[in-house]
Image: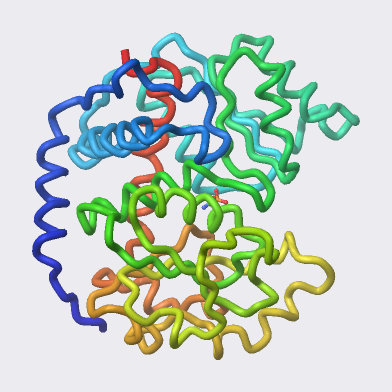
Length: 338
Ligand code: CP
């Protein structure tokens, strides 16, 4: 399959970073970790972002060695409240909390009083009254997280809000890129596919640009965000030009569940025009890497052979960093780096 082109300086930097942070706990930003919630990327100051990336790398060291992490959250209660389906985010938050020693409650939404008409805010307040120290929330309602933040005493973490934001996904994506390239600064990242319905695209674009990468959106006009959104991000409607010179190609799922009408009809012919394959990746830089937040639709937006190619694909590494980054977010929000 694809030939791996080494990128010596960046890769050496990444290795040095990993070795440096394996044993050393990073210092929090001056004045402590500032964010009181994690609902959007803009809730984080630059120092918070740097700290989370370093802390995630520190925890990645424990995960790589299968060594027990410090039980920084012993005695704390973490509530996972997922009103929408999830595999990666839900389970990695659970694993992250467990590894740090927290008590975890996964609210069984499907079997809860939500179906008796209880509002999402009432459900969250009920859970908080049981003694929550942090509430991890996924919902299609884009305003819910801010509404909860107003009424709950504990930090609210956005685990996915409609089409709006998915900040911990962006953070783990940045950690993954840093582990491969050393830095994001100077990289070109092509975010491809159904950007209009994606909460990941928005959070990724905001974060990657703050970290110095050039971001572009690539896909058909009807799957681009509204014209008054992300006005300073280039939009390219053909894959050939869109992938040209990219270091990273981020594929996105067709989010059928958020499309009006017969969303599946849009998948017809999409792969032929916009599918990410070894062939289309030739337009990107030699050695460019492929990423995808998952879940993937193989044969719709990405070819299975490319997704599974260990020389090109960082997709399973994203899942690995999902645990490390969520450990970092929980630690930072609950201990403030003390
Ligand atoms: N990337 C992501 O949010 O995956 P899940 O929907 O499985 O959590």
